Length: 334
Image 1 (cartoon, rainbow, N blue to C red):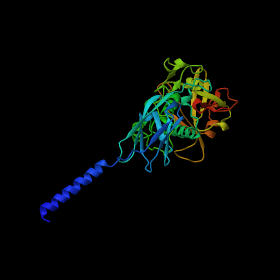
Image 2 (image 1 turned 30 degrees about the vertical axis):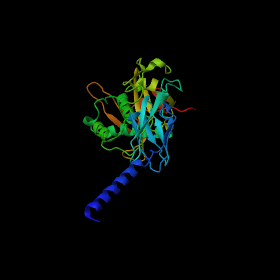
Image 3 (image 1 turned 45 degrees about the horizontal axis):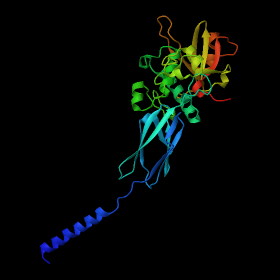
């Protein structure tokens, strides 16, 4: 066989293989189901994404704050709703296949189980979320004590401001960008509070209740919530009375005092997370006094219980001590 004939045979064989390949049935993309497709935006309601494939897909959420992908197995993934209602695109990508997009909708959870004005979508009903809140809240407050005054956020100028700062920043996404902007020298390996991230809630940045009464439909737009709350407002509308016995306090609880018409607050830290030494601590900002801007103090419980001025001792016999209060978002049924 000459060279030309051999080349013609090779070309012909290639053409046959090409035709056979073109006629082969395409491989179907693995099956995917999502149930249910509507969730309550309460931070806990879930949908199950089921996929029929030996390969685990890459799953992304858009918008990212509207839900969380968690608890993946070999054939299912749980998608947990956030608290901000949204139309969610769930993008599922298998290797060598074009991505598939499924739709998921979440709706407002406007309940107030305890009738204290705090919407249920803010409450931390999961033990893991409660623990995460307590750790982050007390860590952020205690961190400010060790910061040089000129390195602290300018907003921290009195006792309520320290509380507002630590509370709000607890619900941020604690990534490297946040740490740099917040000036936090060390980011601990604490679990995040998974239910929601500030400011992605139906209240946006206005986390603090400032009006009496249970939650009403108009409260989301009528000024019932704000970014600012003084010590009295924090006590009346954002926390609830727990006890006048300091031994029952848990980390993250608040101590309130009243001197004439002025309210003061302290954060009960419990054991230090920055310099553990076995002692129990409180931290607070003294507030300005004339030309003195005040300072952040961190006292052990014995130091506070024997404070030189008896009006500042957290004792049941002290009428200036209003008691230990707990955040409404940590409220549990009795």
